[in-house]
Image (cartoon, rainbow, N blue to C red; front, side):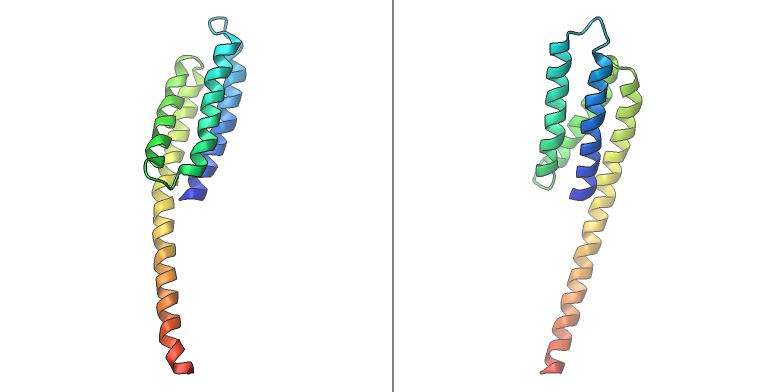
Length: 122
């Protein structure tokens, strides 16, 4: 799960940065505000890569997805990109967990097979 979720979060890092470049063109927002908000979002996306497997990591990721969609208020294209990344986040969590479960089953089967073969060799 960690690899899929981290890949999504790194993609979001770049999207947030590009959204900041677009938001700078707005007369309603100061450059300091844009880059403070974008910087916090970018930092959060990178930090989440490291804590995704810890308790609450996935929920923090969902919080970032909500903020990404809500950023469409300032950069309308972010409504679309936010929904796309929320779907990618869901897929990363859902399929990542399934992959982790399958890996655990394969490891248990391999260990059982090795332990069954070990006495026969001795």
